Each structure stands twice: as structure tokens, then as C-alpha cells.
Length: 301
Image: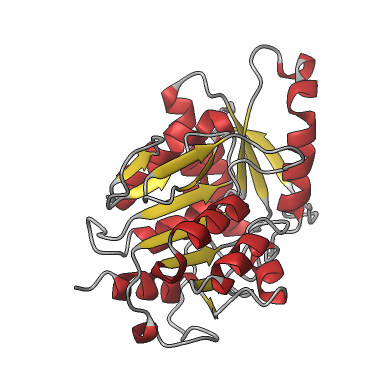
């Protein structure tokens, strides 16, 4: 890509001379271009490699259809189009997967004003996995405050994503189970189900509602926390395309909960956080390092 500036690069995780991880790393070091990786979900190694591509700088990882890819493009056509359009909007010149962030947070209350937080809700989409790694791996281990996590990712990658996130951050990461008591750990929706809490503080999993684009969604998560926890909940809306999570974050704020959006400079795609900010749903706007400091502060006894 050195001779010509490409909008986005789509490649397989397996290639003749180097794999997708190595190729992504080289592209990001020499001439940063948004990269989308196609990976099979039939073998655990392929899933692990696909997820590891995020650490190398890939913007997104999509599921590759079984059999002859060219004969099965219709199966992933709509998703592929959406992922490529989102990736093309990424601002790699302004943010790297592990960019240093020693500057102060941008706006909002000091972290010490947060008290009585009993649960945290996180929502991320495009560009989310590297940010989640950056936040979660710096927190106390095991993290004592339960975290409910929505990451927009292909259903077939969810189980591998939870395992990868746990092994990489060394936090306790589990797939959520309906009816389970709310306990410390990071709880990820098992896929194609909204995650939230019941009135008696048990994990709630609900199917996609009519007309919804995302399932699980940040809106469903934050709305659930607003009803079940109110001022005892903290909602964090991270990088991603679109507006998922913005309305839910507003509902949480109106219920007395605390809310944060990721700042523009550190977001790969400042769509979801921007939507939340424009709605007036954000108490504060922070970069990932500052968000990690907030989460660490509320975990102190």
C-alpha cells in the first residue's frame, strides 16, 4: 500500500507468505491502513489468531463462510459491506492500538466523586477490543466490581472472544448465564442475546426485539441497569460506528446513574460516544487510561 493510499484492506488470516497477524503488523508499522481480517470459526486456532489480529492493529475481524468463499459471499455480504464501510472511517493517523495516553482526561468530574458503584456496564463496537484490553489489563485482579460487557462481534466469535479477553487481561471473564447471581467478574453475553439485570440483581438475557440492529446492544444493557440499579450503576460507552448505547446511557443518567463516553481523540470511530455526548447522556468524557483510573478508583475498599 506504500505507493497508493488505500481506504481499507481486507485479507484472510491465512496467506502463503505471512499470516494475517504478521501482515497487519507490517502494514500498521509502515503505512497504516484500516485492516479487516476474515477468519474461519471452525478451528479454535483460527479464532484465536483472528482475535489476536486486533492486537496487531486490525479494525475488525469477520467470520469467513465455510467452503469455497467466492461461492458463499452472499452469506456474509451485508456484514462485510458494513464492516468495510466502518473500517474505512477509522482514523488510524490519530490513534494506534496501544497509543500512549499520559495526558489528563478531557472533561468531567474527578474520579473521587464516584461512590456506591455496584455494577459497571461497558459497550463497544468497532475498535473496541484493543481499548477493552487497555482498560481491563490495568485494573486490580481480580476486579471486585461486576462488569456487564457488550462488544459488537460476530456470534461465532463470542466464546473465543471471552476466553481471549480473560487470558490476555488475566481478569475473570465468563459468558453470562441467565438467572445467575451478580458476582465479581466480566460477564459477556453468549451472543444474539441482550444482557442486563433483573430487579433482584440476577443476570438477565433477552432475545432480539423487532427492528433492532444490534443484539446484544448497549441500549438494552444501559436501560436494564437504569431500572435495576439506578445510582449504583456506572455506564461506559466506547468507540464504535453508529449510535448504539446512546439512548440507553441517557436513560441511565436520568435514573441517577453515572455515565462516561470515550473521547474523540482516542476513539478509532467516534460514532457511538459522539451520539451519547450529543444527547447529553455523558457525565464525563475520558480516554481509556482515564476510564481505567475511574474503574480502579471505584474498586477501592
